[in-house]
Length: 254
Image 1 (cartoon, rainbow, N blue to C red):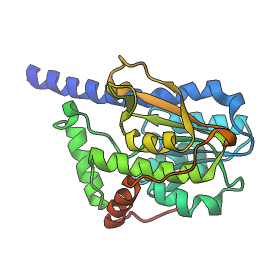
Image 2 (image 1 turned 30 degrees about the horizontal axis):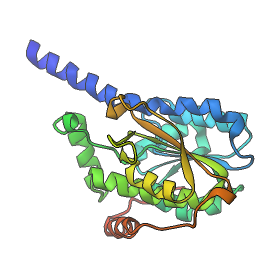
Image 3 (image 1 turned 135 degrees about the vertical axis):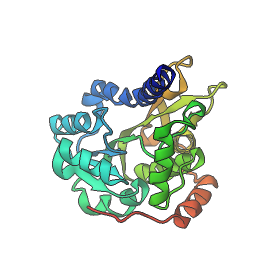
């Protein structure tokens, strides 16, 4: 009994630590005065108890801008509704950004995007009960829970964010960290960052190189128009779109 209890407590502790990196959003408070005027704040991946939705909603209110929180699950949407009411929307982030954001946003632009969705699986979490339940939940919605799909989904979301980005918008990724060579990134935002950095964004802040991967985060900002290179669209985007079109999409609720 004691061994079983210790094992259970260790699982709870590790699961909590995996979510600890989700507090990276608090650093955005320091950027409040630097946000482009008028652009919306968008969160893809609503609050799961860490407080991000309420925090971003408050930031948007203080700076007089729209706030949207999008999640593919009923749970995420309900959590967002409790935090900010009508800011809550349900759907796949990349689909919602492409089709619904232009209809719902008065501003029509994004000054700040926080992309923290489509869960990442770390080696030590594969056998945990909560991770096994995630596979069940994703499969029930016709989605594949894998690290490759997590990167592909974040890439497609980054493409849409870049489309609506204000002149100097910010994008924050959680569960993302610099690779050993420091010239590329791993985790949820790995492929998305490759796209953004090739299309006129630069790193502003990121977790230190010695930070544990599950606590990693990266913040990038768009360069001024005169400093951006010609726009490119990597071949990986086509593969990500093909994989997304093969999935069964959950019902989109506004």
